[in-house]
Length: 227
Image (cartoon, rainbow, N blue to C red):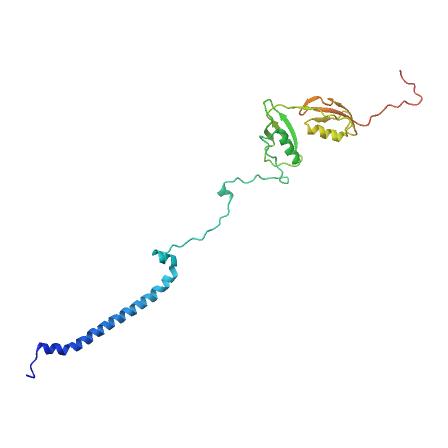
């Protein structure tokens, strides 16, 4: 009776040992999983800190590097602007006069200390059609510029110059587009003029002005006056 072995007794004897094996295996599995997770987090954390950004993480997508804006200096090649014309003689150039009224063109040349010579055409109008030298050409101060005008020379009224200083009279003639001519010299007061005051002339016409002191002939002592 004592030596009888039954399957039930065998089960009862083996149950405590099997329970211990199951418990040990479970603990080992949990321990390995914990260690593995800790090691994986430690290895992955630096990469996440180096490449991730809060915005990318919240959006659930990969982070995109943003290029910093750069400032480019404009160059003639990029803008297509032609370089300014090379200037000599202190940077003085013929101004752009084509299309202007010829009196405005004359005043512009005067302001730049350049001379002018008006050449009138046979068409109509008062505008400048061409200059010689051409506009933007480098020149020296005092250079005379030929100014070609589309239409004929307009009429002007001759001013009254009698009694004025010869130099002042020449300036007054120049203001209205006329030129002085000096048959008796260019010093002293104007004693005579031709054409007379208020006569009609045209631009570029000449006005003869006689300058100098009026001299009254004095008789020579002992001389017999001629009758």
